[in-house]
Length: 222
Image (cartoon, rainbow, N blue to C red):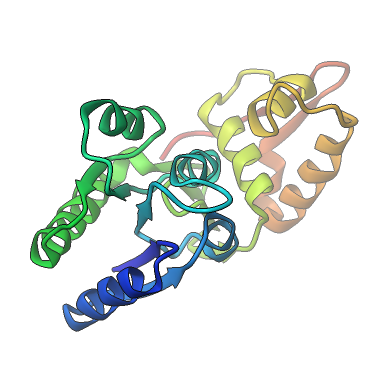
């Protein structure tokens, strides 16, 4: 298990880290939302996130995490009133603990949340034609060989695999992966598709160009 602890109070994040490491959980700390986003990668299993931080708040950080990763977020906050807790859930949090808190309870929440996310692994996996894509870790393999792709490449491949046999326009892919307010050239998709095909080797042939329309994924589910 690997956890990221994000809190702008050094004593709190260090105490949490020491306790979780003592319990056998690999733990990384960050002192701000910006540092948390920079530290995250697909190897993490959970984020413990303080709500009130200078700069990017915990709520804003959670929303950024949700755009790129599918992993549980546990909020910590001194704000224990109902509206604050509800707002945490609405921003994408999976659980919420009010400071001060018990380290033992925190540890057991962390373990339970990670095991729950890991429990239904089939819901996190897309498989077709030798290609496996883990939506939780945002990782890809082809014929059991790990494939190194950028996060955007993985998101594009996931979108195509989730919509197998459906034609997706470049505009639709841009809107889904970059957001509706993206103002760049939709031909950037062609560059990403080229990289994905090259990385997948023989598996790249399952991404089909539909002239004048866009792309579709053609393959048989395993």
